[in-house]
Image 1 (cartoon, one colour):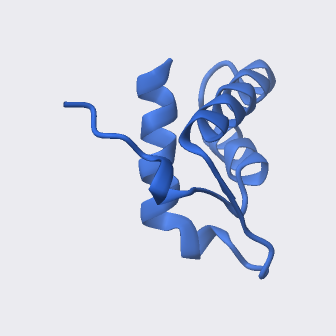
Image 2 (tube, helix red, strand yellow; image 1 turned 60 degrees about the vertical axis):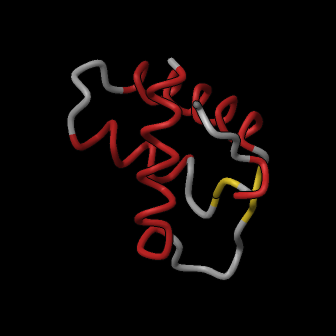
Image 3 (cartoon, one colour; image 1 turned 90 degrees about the vertical axis):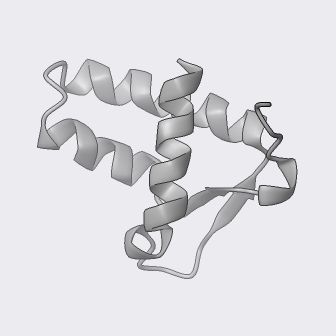
Length: 77
């Protein structure tokens, strides 16, 4: 599950500006971001078990404008 949260974080950091159409942004600690991403994934998976475009649209809506505060990211080494 941590890998999934990490994948979302990479996706959001890399594509953050394209997801955010408003000025409202939230920067969370890595731990809080992972918790939020886990909840969003659980909710969206229950909406679309096939992980189709509907799932990804749901994730985009749930995680819109939410980013990781880079000062809270620790090395995995």
